[in-house]
Amino acid sequence: MTTTIIFDLDGTLVNTEALYLKSNVKAAAQLGLHRTEADFRPLVGAAGPSEAKVIADMIGAEHAAWFQKFSTADVLDQIQGGADFVLPNVQPTLAALTTAGYPLALATSSPRHYVDVVLAATGWQRQFHPILTGSDVQAHKPDPEMYEAMKVKLGNVPAVVVEDTHVGVEAAVGAGLPVVMIPGIAQKTRFKSDRDSVINQRIASLVEKSACVCVIF
Image (cartoon, rainbow, N blue to C red; front, side):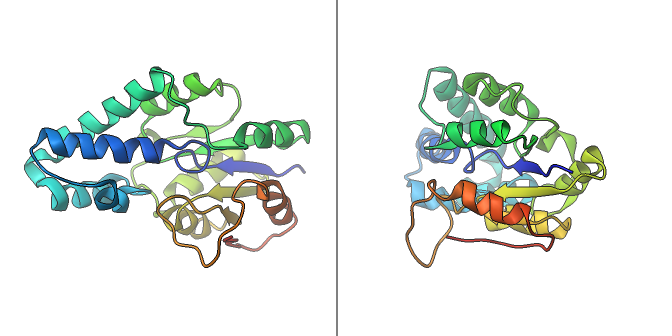
């Protein structure tokens, strides 16, 4: 039975996290606050209550809802305006996996309307099936609900997860799925390596494994 490859979206396939950091700084400036991209790095990989708490601590709870709305709208404006945000070598990697016969799925904590814009901008509307978003679950990563729901949708099919944050890895492992981690901008690694040139080998090695694994390079 062919293994399904389940991808996270932000930071794994697209560099929207970098766009968000710029938008976060812009939103803070609108509030008269001087913040840097480094200040907002704790938001990378965060969603739901954990994200709201970080924002509240940084810019005040009374501004949190506006801050999130402004930042997301600004990121979507950048994407729809033609921003180059697909990470290097992602397109050929997806093409190679599809050609090799691997079904591709998507599991992201981002809301459905945001995901729809990203998929339209990248031309990936038919690249992934099934697709689960933050709008489809009650609890966000690192809670395993997202990946538990994905397992139900896939049925009795082997699967491997590709994530870029420890939060995502924790969610996948919690659901009993093997996972390869390709560290994103918020993650510290012990040594430097070509992030993209080895992605296919890392995925291929996990396809052959049944245990939960976190591969960090």
